[in-house]
Image (cartoon, rainbow, N blue to C red; front, top):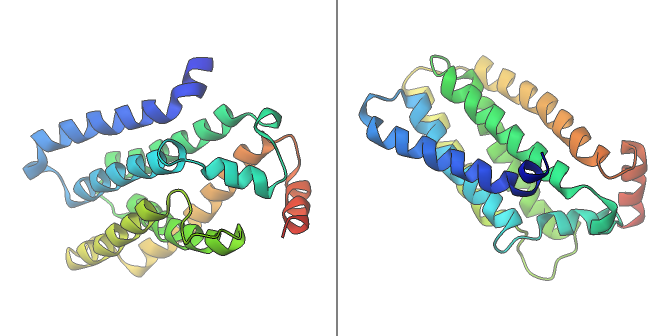
Length: 199
């Protein structure tokens, strides 16, 4: 388990590479949803690299905001939660590709990532207009916009699908947030109070 917690990001990237290899062999016969999911998986892997490996520093920003040090938190648990979250979202879209709904959850996440990484520039009072993950977050948002257009043109998604996708994303993201920050040794109200103090 210690190995998985330490190297979960690279394990996730490895899984994405394997899926991409499989997809490339049978690309012509893949459903539209699986093709879009594969593209999302590539940018999700790149996003994790940008946030945590190169240039990295996303969790450093978050810990600074919460007034914590690396030795105070279980970073392995936090990053593992994120990797598992990605696998659940992308895996659901891949295996249930007869419907567009599972993919709309990832589409919602992509738009949110672009927004929050951009807003993070002001939230964290950064001197440069960049947060770790910003570039790939916007790439995912562009892919999400293309995916919406492609799904709509193919008649695979309706307003109901996007609404349900947004609702399920909110629920899943709350679960992810609680899982990550419960490892910080503080309750959610305490974390919120710390953020207010560090404004």
